[in-house]
Length: 114
Image 1 (spheres, rainbow, N blue to C red):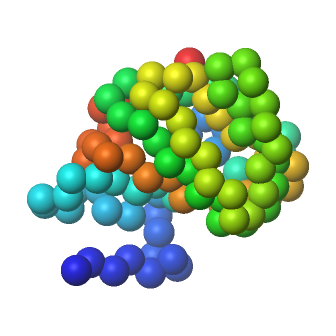
Image 2 (image 1 turned 135 degrees about the horizontal axis):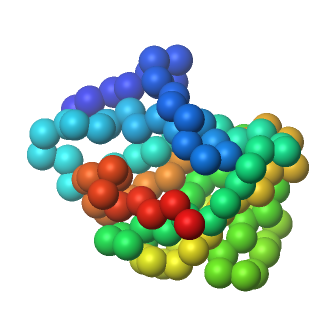
């Protein structure tokens, strides 16, 4: 069992968001997790994951989940399922924290910015 503490997450900048991959490089992992921090006014652009679906848990905040031209309101506690290869993004109303789950261990090759 591997436990990562929330304060130990190392965030890096991606287009319109800050992202941390707490289990990157863990041997034998068959899935991956990404923590995403969003702030209003950031330059959000769609992206997609060509090799897997994505499950997004809204841990903090509220905004709109945009998927292939359709928007839905989301807030803390909501869960969003994004099919493989579908363009999507989350647009925040205020500060948001998302926890994104992927049944793919290699996020670096499972992300296409659009």
